[in-house]
Length: 216
Image 1 (tube, one colour):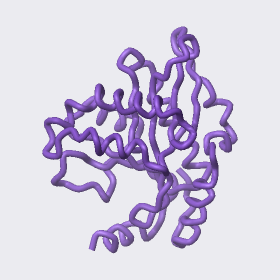
Image 2 (spheres, helix red, strand yellow; image 1 turned 180 degrees about the horizontal axis):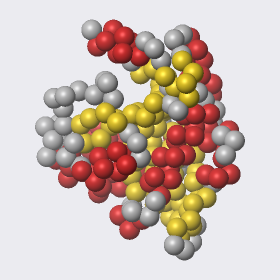
Image 3 (cartoon, helix red, strand yellow; image 1 turned 180 degrees about the vertical axis):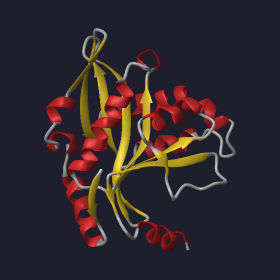
């Protein structure tokens, strides 16, 4: 973790704007070649980082179907339920960025993350809204590899932290993120079906004050 402290919101905002201007933030990471491909037990994957506007609509439709298969049943037991129209709208947001893993042997999309750069409660963050992996490709290290790629983007653009949301009734997902070092964020509500996790990369001395001010 960096020990740089950001107390000036304008600095954070400039970092966010710089990241937002990049059509392919992963390509700007010095270690980008290390994240271009991933191999595991004979399986080879290529990573693609794209804006939603550059994606074929069929890819976004696949992303929705994969989310529905993976977490639809978990949402159905929550008070909000599974809301397909809202999920489809979220995946089609103009600001959405996608990191997609493609099986090089079949040319099929097998996993994705959907994320954005934002100022969240006064902190510059990469917010990961989705991390979905096709069932037959799970537990092969691919999800962890993709999260590591996002973390390098965070560090390159000097974001304060990587933030994500996970359902409390999805123990495998909770365990996955905890294993990667993500902890309950100070903005996480106590009375919801989900919790907000984060990993801090740059400390700020006024982080808690920003959260309290935003929540008041």
